[in-house]
Image 1 (cartoon, rainbow, N blue to C red):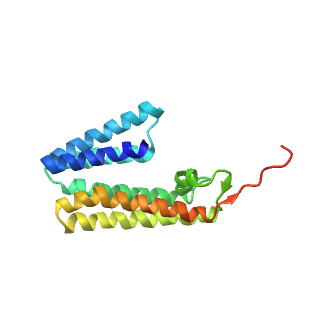
Image 2: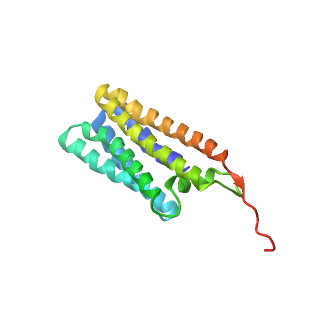
Image 3: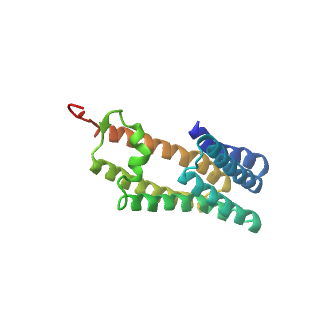
Length: 186
């Protein structure tokens, strides 16, 4: 359900973009992102930091796109978001008890197992590299190819790549997962 809730604004943006163009699509994307945050809050009494940051960026870059009638602002949003995530992953490796990779992917590990901290750190740096590369790829597609190509890349390309990377990384981390020895006499 959460994945559908996160993907719905992009799908709505794509449909409206195909029917009415970039500016109408931007309005729908902005409204859908706010609605997504409201729904998430009503369901769980909180909004994830990533969802909130993405929504704020969509509102900021979308507003600039609409006010200045220039879609280049909207095209920058995915790159800024991904580079902010890369910075977040970098910072998490230095501060706190768990890296962002561990916080996000620990649920994908077998129950009753643990992954060595070194593997989590490697996974975290893999996300840094992924987000830096995808942010750069977004700029390359956005400013080299047609607007329609960029929209398809944004909606499908980035989404699929991130899902594949997450799946591969969960598989890779599972190779390191070891059963936790239960405490004796408890």
